Length: 428
Image (cartoon, rainbow, N blue to C red; front, top):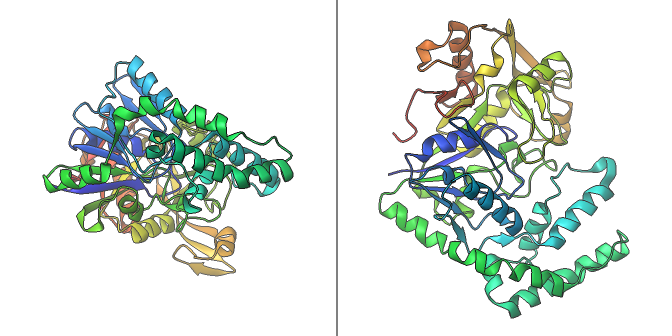
């Protein structure tokens, strides 16, 4: 049976939670492989709406085991807040598994994140201020705190003291803040140890054995392709690898075991935070997309910047992820426009450019070249098959598929769990 990777093909917020949840009943494990509580998924089940930040979306599927992999950074207070919230709503969270090699977001990581972003002023990146970047920096600098460290107080104390040696110099001498006491941090982190213990496992061994036993494993990325630290619009990116390669390093499952890579693609484009965005709309159309699409960040609460569909971005995502399929979301939001512009290329320094430029400067100055496609006015939220869609909606989907470089195998026509048209099975 297959190992599937499901990830965002734009700047995140494409509707990955719904896609993962739809597959949840058909898979045995859903694995978050990177990011932290800076990612947000909204999942609608019946008349219930769930906002998930750190937990894998598969936690809402009773037969599925949710896993937080080694590539994730975990804020224990957020984790238990989410678990408690789901438990209060009758969701069974007891099957959750957490890698002992996942890194912990410490209180000082959050402090450094907030003061650094404030210090940057107009040059700020637009982080969520949740300590994600500093935690990944500690990981790379080899002063990070892992989940397994909570079970050896001596090692934990040594690591916290080592991490704070440099950070306290920064806080006191650069940011004019108080030094953070290592003992207080250790004491706080130890309060989570026993609460975490039932969930901690050797997830690398478990997932590989599951695949050997023909179980279906779905790897769920946070954020999106253009927020990838290596392949995104650097420096306006996240601190990890949401692209398909990150699924391997963030879970310990080798690339030869991945059979399908599914890109979640919104029928228009959005992003949160600073950075270039060629098709961004600062007019009534942009406001309409934001209002109709409910474009507000699940985690940040910030309004998303909105623009028309960008085909070069979709082609780029296909290329760097090796996408086999697309799941097109929020097609219903476009209902009501007489014409729908689609960016097919860019103009840069007077020249037509078909692909995403590698240069940040060029991308910043890229002007979208649009083709207008005919719109539709019919309600599509009740459509169950592709043939049920209005002809112009069908043509729009086919045009996006042709421009993007991979088949569109499913279409979201509304926010509900059942408001999806499945064209080809992802488990084929």
